[in-house]
Image 1 (cartoon, rainbow, N blue to C red):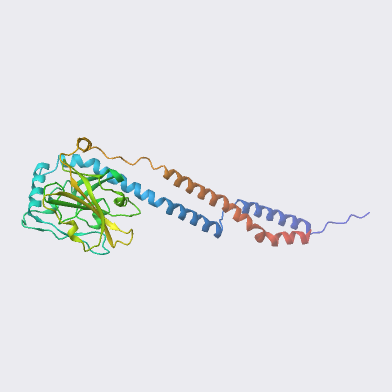
Image 2: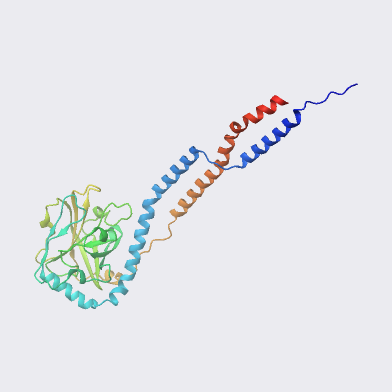
Length: 328
């Protein structure tokens, strides 16, 4: 009996199938995320970043402000001229000042129009604890505000803390003086005076200036038009401080004005608390959430990249599989 030979095409067909299997196995190990996976990852990371940005930026700003206040006491201890000399110059400045302010509509900050009768007094050099123009420290217990106060009200200053309005009296107290301190409201990266509208009559404001501690009791809070500048002028017989910020949030057509009158003598509790280090922001636990979310997105992209590669496998190897079936 004669044996029938196997078809000559069988061996090549088996080899082709094996090569196809090897290519399929290699494709299964390939990492290549698809477009949809990348879009999902980008959207997830974008949402995570948008959600965490305000907390992150506010924490950084608060931390930096706290570090500035920590160094304030040591700065005034070593300052030249001495703290006593600078306080004396500040009183001379106030005596020479004809104070007033201008509030421009839609402007973020007021502009002082006070003039000096003595040109020898340089505003920028009086009560300057460091090269950045650090002047004082303002505390508002009602809204947990503890801010450094700098010379002037430029955007650069108000991005770091509160600013003293040039043209108003320096914050060293005195009958017939009104010191005006301003800060931003509604910033995404800092609280500043955002909650100034919550301050009530009877609350206190404490200003620490070169070792001098001044406490004021709030006697009036109101919202004014930009042209109501008489509200911010000094009053004979009164020792005043005024805090000012813009309102409504993001529109800035009006001003919130909080005015306090000096309490004498300064309460013992405020004298005791003077110079104490501010509360340093604690560990940002929300950063753990951000890190965990980022890792989850990375794990998703890593794993989905292999799945996306496998989904494309059949289309890449259909031709090989069909050839194998035909030649079997």
